[in-house]
Image 1 (cartoon, rainbow, N blue to C red):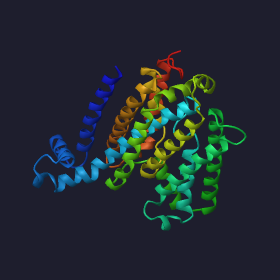
Image 2 (image 1 turned 180 degrees about the vertical axis):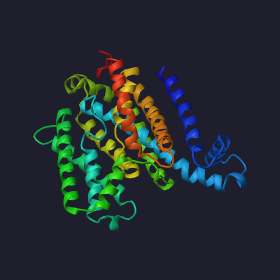
Image 3 (image 1 turned 90 degrees about the horizontal axis):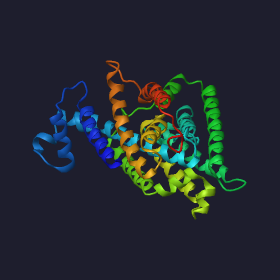
Image 4 (image 1 turned 60 degrees about the vertical axis):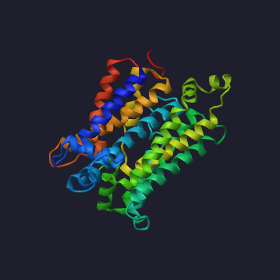
Amino acid sequence: MYVGVSFLLLVILILSVGFAVNLGSVDISLKDVYRIIIYKIFGIGDSEVLSSGAIHDVIWLIRLPRIILAIAVGIGLSVVGIVIQAIVKNPLADPYILGISSGASLGATIAVMMGIGSVLGGNAIGISGFIGAFTVSILVLIIANIGGRANSVKLLLGGMALSSVCSAFSSFIVYFANDAQGMQTITFWLMGSVAGAKWEQIIFILPIILIGTIFFMTQYRTLNLMLLGDEVSITLGTDLHKYRHVYIIITSLMIGVLVYSSGMIGFVGLVIPHIVRMIFGTDHKKIIPIAAILGAVFLVWADILSRILIKGTEIPIGILISMIGAPCFIWLMIKKTYGFGGKD
């Protein structure tokens, strides 16, 4: 069943990409959209017509990069959400619960408020956010291993503690910097957006997200064991300690590159895994590919809505996801009884 659902979602994703690229102030037919995409990827078609011109530039250089970035963000956040929830054995966990969000925010705040931007160049906020997110993740591992081996509870508590510390330092820097323009820049970045997507970024980001996703698809047995707990896994001959370390480092790398490219987009890593588990249970062999494609579809349509809801302006995608996603998620939870191990 899950293979059929995955295929159906993949078809929906392809159609959604065509619709999203077609949508905008410049009127372009779906036929032109797919002709140019097919030509650029497979080299099929009339090169004189499809390789240049205004329509080519709008589709290939402006609209398609942001859609591909939205797909990468949707895949990455959804898969990382599933993995983090398995690592800490907490259904309320999301990709930012281990302090990654606050670490990225602190890195961005330092870049803007303390003038590091001139050293790092035009991508200063994104690079600093990536460094902050990755550094905090490593610190969580170090703290969780103090006084004994790390387990799900120590990882969760360490992440929450470091999150509070990073938030406090961010507030401290903002308070004493007294820079209204810098604060506005940080606030906009924290809202999340895929509007600034470029192919140079995507060529770097997409392989990391896809390789990470494929890796976790091969780890479904270990992720299933994590839901059972350390005691059960040891009796079955698997020590989860080293796996947690590897998984956290890989998920942190994935979140770090997403933070670098799109700012902070929350909630996806919480909602998509829950929706998939409600329908398909908790077997990671099934839910990781389905969640990856569903997350991609979700982000593409969130980007579409962010562009069309208010004429003449664009709503930051992070705000829109929280405004629409939270009520829908609450409704789903009310309509269907749900536990971390599947149906109660």
